[in-house]
Image (tube, rainbow, N blue to C red; front, side, top):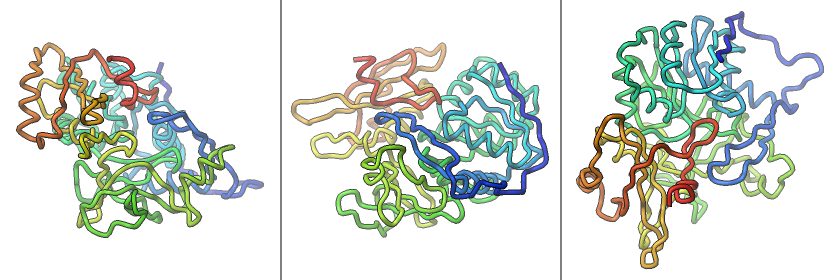
Length: 369
């Protein structure tokens, strides 16, 4: 089923009578990819600021037609819907994601924007009739929810013929925390820069001191009007996530380059430690995804008596391809330090995902091993 929200004039009047910008607007529940969902309490100011700055960075306006299958219960889908309502765009909303139906919808509705998580793009790229569809009206696409291999992002831009704007956000921010400007520099692999009027910093998770050198990895933290007020009924979790000065711990490991672009390395909880060496699953996934026979990949950990943990790659191969796992391992050894090469490779039919399409690494071992 497809829902079509028609373009209207943008809303300019707020607050409404009896509603303050500091009143609670939304209680958004986290996706639970690394733990149990929690309810993030967000004010009208948080939501409106996020939507306004997202529209500003992406150049969203009443001439746009957006095609999306992102669930509105998820923060990504929520900000897409709110931006459409707030800035007069037409939103073509699909109840479920099916690659063929999405391609037909983009062509039929002359979409200017498609928005999705990495797995959606990977399914679209692997669709056998992709070249049959006219996607020439697309002017930009957005991708978020998880890191996406740079090789796949380049393929999306080449095939779709438009810019792919990477973004990063959290339920606790009511939407985006960082993204690229549609008219700004292109930096694939980066999540962009913080939304205007917000602050970001990188903090060493051990010393709790700010990182000052470009390229140095630490935890990404955010502060500003988009940050949640609290976790509903969870003062303990609130204190753990947000300090007295308003800085929100995101749980993402990241670094900033010399130009101020933020690069997310991985989730802090997904870090694999092998014989004392840190291994970031997202780095391994980016390398494996460069292999032409790989459609999707997720890297998880398996226990090891001698080294503590070892990396294991779970691969979904491209349709009608005979994938040689020894060749994939050789591909990794040519591009990664020896200790980073996964010790195990396995082919699976699909990867475990949340309702929003995010891969659940913590479920890999539970399902496949």
